[in-house]
Length: 97
Image 1 (cartoon, one colour):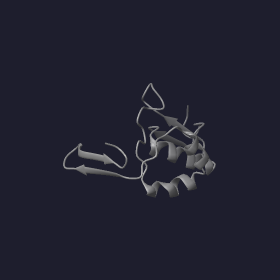
Image 2: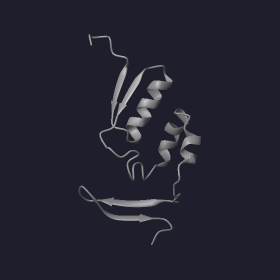
Image 3: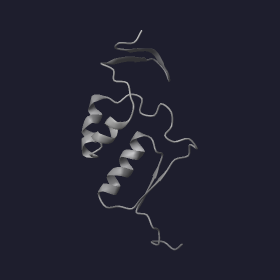
Image 4: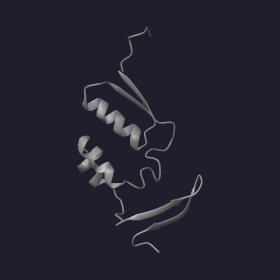
């Protein structure tokens, strides 16, 4: 294949929340997108396990509210995570023991 002969305008590596969001938005803007995920299992377990309130603007921009509502999930009223290193020391979720 010669330069410029690619059937894609963009290559997105990783089908996590950020990669899928980027690929979807690029596609909505008319670009031909190739989304590559290294994991043999997709969707990956526990991907996007916590969506902060600030992500709502991104969901709206992607027009993905119906898709998000269709995915089985457990709603939580809040959470608290204390980071002192590379992993959390404390994780509490409202309504969880």
